[in-house]
Structures are given as structure tokens and as C-alpha cells.
Amino acid sequence: MFLPLDGDGELYLQLLRALRSAVRDGRLLAGTRLPATRALAAELKLSRNTVLAAYELLCAEQLAVARSGSGTFVADALPRHRQQPRAEPVDAQSAYAARLRRLPPLPLPTRRSDLPIDFQYGEPMTHLALFTSWSRALTHAAARAQPGYPAPQGSLHLRAQIVAHLGRRRGVACEADDVVIVNGTQQAFSVLARVLLDEGDRVVVEEPGYALAKHCLMAHGAEVVAVPVGADGLEVARLPSAPPARMIVVTPSHQFPLGVTLSLPMRQALLQHAARNGSWIVEDDYDGEFGFEGRALPALRALDAGDRVIYIGTFSKTILPSLRLGYIVCPRSLRDDIVLAKRTMDVASSGIEQQALARFMASGAFDRHLKRTALELRRRRRALNDGLAAQCGERLVPQDSGTGMHLVAWLPGFDAAAVRRLIAKAEQRGLGLHSLAPHYESTPPMQALLIGYAATSVSQIHKATCLLGESLDAVTRLGRREHETAGAGGRPRLAGVRRVARSN
Image 1 (cartoon, rainbow, N blue to C red):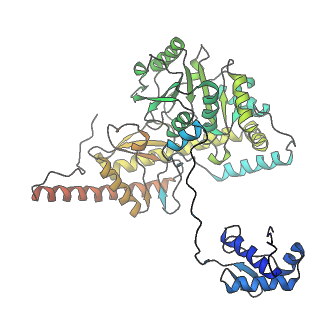
Image 2: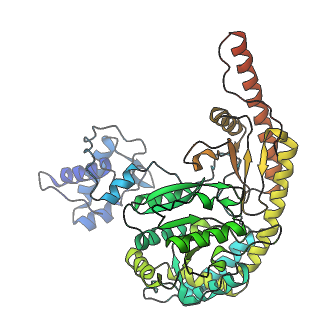
Image 3: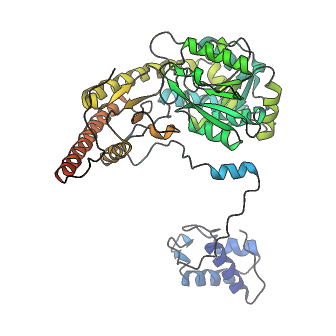
């Protein structure tokens, strides 16, 4: 233990001051067990009586407590003491840091453990077979781990498995040399921003869209332009051309968050626009594995004859977000620069987890997991749609794309305040709801909920839709009372909730 003595006075008093300072500075946390007196005396080359005396005085000051047979512990409730004044924050040391400080806080979506049911979006479906197979693969890889640094581009075995997987399931033809392993989608965006963007370069994102990607690009100094998403996906006709965007970020297979698919004519128009204007298209295929109904379109990259599409894939939605592994399929002209940027950023991604993932894919366990997950997600989506129809009626209009792990449910007649009341009423009943509005740069055309169902069982979905219906009833009654009160008092009508017929 690092306890420097100041050399002033008796040794037990010097030790007391050192211990007192460690407790008050937070180097010894509340409840921490202090070393045994013999052990500390031997370590500091002091007599045991000196340590005993210091401990007794520390207990007398209520900074520690002696527990018979257990030892001496830092007190759980420490007496308050005068804090040193905080230093004023210094100016950012770089333009990048200054931009980070100007960005609004953006918490990661996290399931609330205090609520029995939470329609949290972005969480994958997990099951016992997944954990069993993954644990087996991880144990095997750890026992055979190479001692050196992994290759910056990633494990060749894993890259080969990704190439085979993309060819089978997403129609993407590439080679292992085209693939770079990264630590998830967010690092992919950061690497691409470093390679492709200078400060002030224009980047197009979808409106509404994935806020974490937008924040990353803004932090790198990009001028971010939000282009609306319509029924056929990104409205290509509204892309800027003077000056054109250096980068266009799209989620064509299952637009986040609306869920629409970029139509084939729009895909062709987007590729033509990129070729004409020298733009790079970044295809974020975050959950393209889970197409349930109809014949899925191939990835945008599969249609790209001009090598302008950079494909990003992730295992966060197909396996676990905590795995933090993803990949970039690079145009040949960018590959070397992307590998250099990845190496400069963090040398390489975890070698053990890469080897485990390669084994997991090669054994067929990954394909079996995807098949099992897709079937179960279909059951859950049907249960959700049935429950919303039965419990919510025309007060809530689902927009179901038939794919992915979430859907949007529109709330006709609601304003932002009514949505906040609905979320609060549901929370009182133990149900977590999430508004769509934060994913828009501007005011959304209609208020809506973003409902994730992958991490919620069918039985939980049945109960959750009942709770949602009860919450809608409560908010509707509240809105009706506000309307009646406003009418009785002759005041302007308050914005509330009204029942609206479903529109086509």
C-alpha cells in the first residue's frame, strides 16, 4: 500500500496522517478492508504497535471501524470535510476536443433494470444455446491464443468467414483482403471519418437517423446535412449537389429508426448520384440479417459496379453488443489507408475474441443462431402487432416493415407533452417506453414510439401491450379532463390527446 510518511513527529502520527489523507482523498474507498496490522507493519518497516496506534486513532476519528474477528475497515459513512475548490475547466486543447464539448450528451440505449418490462430498442435476442456455443468457442480460443499482437487488419480466418457469410446471406462478393475488423460500428465511422473527411466536408445522414454516427462525424468536423426519409427510403432527389456530399450514410436494408427499405429504383439513383458527384456511400447494415417476410433485396454494396460503397457490418445485433466486433468491406482504393488508420487508433481488435468468432462461424453455430433468432423474432413481432391491435386500437398505428428487431408506432393526435405523459404513465405501471422524436433533427411529422421487441419474450409482450393500452386510457382521460376544464373556464384549449381514425 502506498502510504508516504511526511517525516514530521512520531511515526504513529505520521502513519495516521497518511491513512487519513488516503481515506479523504478517495484512495481508500468506504467499506475497504485495511491491511492486517502485521502485514502493514512488515510492508512499511514499522513496529506492529505503531500500526495499531494509528488504526485506533483512525477509528476514534470515525474514519474507520474495527470489527472483531474481521479486521479494520474504512467507515461506510465518512464524516463530511471541506472540499478543495474545483479548478475551472480549461479551454479544449484541440478543435476536436472543443467540438466534442459542444455536442449534446448522448446516452447509450440501456435497458432499465428497475422496470419489469422495457421496450428498449437496439438490444439483440439472446438464448441459452447462444451462450453455450459462444462460451465453448471463447474457451477454445483462449487456450490457443497467440502471444503477440494481432494483425491490424484482423484475423485472416475471421475475415474469410465474413466473406463467405456475406456472399451467402447478403449477396456481397468480396475477398478477405477487402475486409478490415474494427471494434463495432462506431469505430468504423471514426476510422472512415479520419480517412475520408477534412474539417468542413459535407456529409449526408438520414432524417430521422442514427444519432451516434452523426455525433461521431460532427466531432471530426464534418458539416452534417440531414436528408428526409420517405416511403422508399432516403429521398435521393433531395441530396445536395452544390457542393456535393463527400460521404452519404444510409441504412438501406432496414432504415433506422423508421424501418423502411430503400427501394431498388432509389438504390440505383443513389449509386448514380455517387458516381456523378464523386461521393462515398457508407452502407450501415446493422440488422440486415433479419429479413422475415418476402424476398429481401441484397445489400447495396452488391449492386455497386463503381466501387463507391463502403459496407459496415456488426455482430452487436446478431450476437452481443458487449462483443464490440464489426467490420468494414473496403473499396480497394481505400483499403491501405483504412488499415493504417485502424492501426494508429488502437493497433488491433482483440485477437482472442476474433479467433473465437471465427470458430463460432466456421462450426455453423452462427448460422444456427441466426435461424433460431429469426424464427423467434417473427413470433415476437406477431405477438406485438396482435397485442397493439387488441389493446390500443386506432389510437396507435404500427408501421411494421416485417424485418429487424423494432418497429415504429405512430400516435395520431398526440403532441410532445402527451407523449411524455404516456411514457410517465407506462413507467408507473412498470413498462418502459421510448419516444421516436429524439432521432429527428427537426420536429417529427407525427409523434411516435420506437418499440424494441427482440429482448422481450412473447409472454412479456402480451403483458406489455395490456399495460400500454391502460396507459393510453389514462392519458386519454387526462386529455379529456383538460379539454373540459379549458372549455368551462373559457380559456384556450390545451394540447392533449384526441381519438383519431387510422389514416391510409
